[in-house]
Length: 321
Image (cartoon, rainbow, N blue to C red; front, side, top):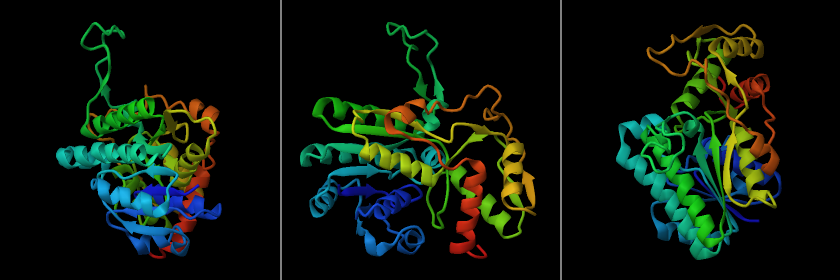
C-alpha cells in the first residue's frame, strides 16, 4: 500500500514514522514543509516529500498520480484549530471543509478506495440544541456545533460519509481529543501548545504551568497508530471513531503525574478560567469502545508513559529548549 499523508504535523509526522518503520514509503504533502522539524520524527530519506496545497485540486491530483497512491490520510487543518477558526472563520471554513471536499473528490476521480481524515472530539462537547428529544419534525431536534471549528468538523464527517455512501469510498473520521506529543515547530491546537510548554519547562528546570481545566488527552503516537489501524482494517466500512486516552485528567491529577515522570519539576496550576465549562464535573470521557472493536485501537501511552516518553524525546531532540 502506498499512502499519501496530507499535513506533515503533530499526527501526520507520526503516521509517516509508523509506515516507514513497517517498511513502507509514504508520500507526505504539506503547503509549508518543515523539513528540519520533520526530520526529528522520521527519516526523510525514507519518505517522499512534496509541497502542495490541498485547496488546489490539480496539485492534489498530481501528487496522487506521482505516488500511485492507494489510500489517503488527511490531517491538514487551519492553524490553532478552535482558536484560529474563531479569529479567522473564512480561512478556517475554506481550508477545513473544502480541503476535505478536494480530497474526497480526488479519491473518487482516481479510484482511491480508502480515506482517513482528522475530525475532533470538540463534536463531543461543543454542541447546542437537541432540546426536542430527537423529534425531527421540530427545529431543535438535532444538536448543532456552537463554534466555527466544531462546525467544520461536523461538515468533514458528513461530507466524507456521503462520499462514501455515494461512491463506495471507505471513509473514517477520527475524533482525536487534544493531542500531546513530540513536535518542535509551529502548528497544532492551543491545548497541544500548552502541554508542550508544560513538559519542556519541566524538563529544563523552569516553572511548568499545568492547564487549569480538566481535559482529555491522547499521545500523538497513539493518534497516529489509530490512523494506521484505520488504513489497514479489513472491514472498516465507513464511520466515525473516538480516538482518546479514554479518561479525563483534572489539573491536580496531571500535576501529580508530571512530578512523578519528571522528579523535581517545579509546577504551578493555572487558575480556572472564569466561566469555564471544562471543570470535568459532569463531563464524561469519550467512549472508545467502537474504535477498539472495529479498528483494534488500544491506547499504548497512558499519562505516565506519555510524559516519560515525551520528556525523553525533548532531552534527545531539543536539549535546552
